[in-house]
Length: 555
Image (cartoon, rainbow, N blue to C red; front, top):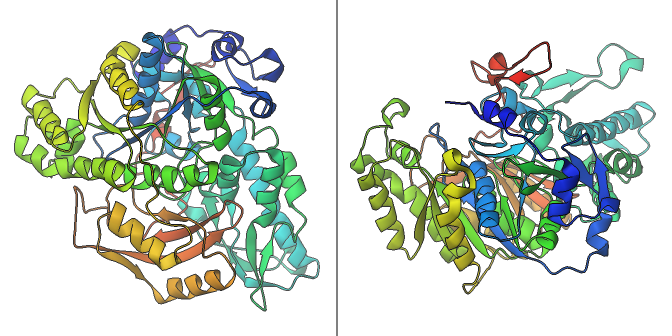
């Protein structure tokens, strides 16, 4: 059996100019990055008069070691729609080097439902993440230089909130002390790094709608507070213009292709557990303008990615999804039912029954909390039995939701035709889209709404520190911003060991900070961290390149 990278390397790619023609992108908007990648000038959005197509969100159950195949399903669905004669485009996130070299080993789909060039997409791609890191760290350098050069703004070095970032899982950098070495080497202080995908600059890039909006958002970024507790911004440090200059090309969406030649925009890459987990608004809007169907995905389970897509991205961008796909596997559901990874290939209806509530809760959230049409896509494995598949189908049908078997990993678009037909049908169904909370509600009310409505917990518990931060942020005028929850992806709760559909739990918020440029509040729950670490055996150990430049080991 061929590996993902072997499949990708053995499939001929079309020149990106041909893909652009397929997508309806005129040559004047195309900026080539080699033969198979290009950036699209954002002027396209200002100059097109095309109506929006249908917007389809692909999300999933809470992830497990068994895998779910959300990106694979997204790609395969788009290919299937094009096989049906529909003008479909994909809008995905860019992979981070952290997971590529850490646990996942890549994030470009899998099997015969991939975006290519797979190696480029998973590694440096077009340099967007490097630009984001440079802009982030320029602001950090200007902040520390301001303090070194006399600190005219009166910044309290103990109340600096801005961190440096690097696109790598590096736990050693979570907490550092810098500025050591004497008077001319900086002001000694406690500091730390975030992974680039968790940085506010990443969120700003993904939520910006133009260069002008980008600069305005960058200028609003809060880096710390003065001795009299007033916020200090990137605008105060006169950093926004230079940051925007570093980001001007990164703001342009990237165009690539699927294995079947479907145009795919891949742009931005915030994690959904520690950030808002969606690709850029600009890429999504381009897909909507150029296609009759735009398929996008949001990170991790629907409690994280879909919630943030709907409550943050759709709220800010004025988007309304036409249909939602919830991806699951029988294997993953059995894991939620208590089966060890080594035993997932054996039929176990009892465990599947115990694990199914995880899927059903996500489905109910989509249909009842958000009022959207929904289909369950079962990413089929050869070990799935007919009895197991029937049990999933029966339970979903009881909620009024259809199940479509997806075999896109092994068959490409052909294996997604049943799912595509159901998605097309759902896009014509009534839509009663609504948010999980009113942004004008208090911070605590919004936190409680997410915990009780989406997670199905008993409510939020604020530590004394978080309660103090909440009061301060409200006094500063940030109380009406939406909430970005930083929470473990493995559970509805803030305890990653509580699998399935737990109840009777509370979610502890230990820290609340404002991302004023992005336009939301970040609530850190449980023991979630904004800088991941590498596993005991990193995926990087298996990645190599030969004398001809051919990369192996990505998956």
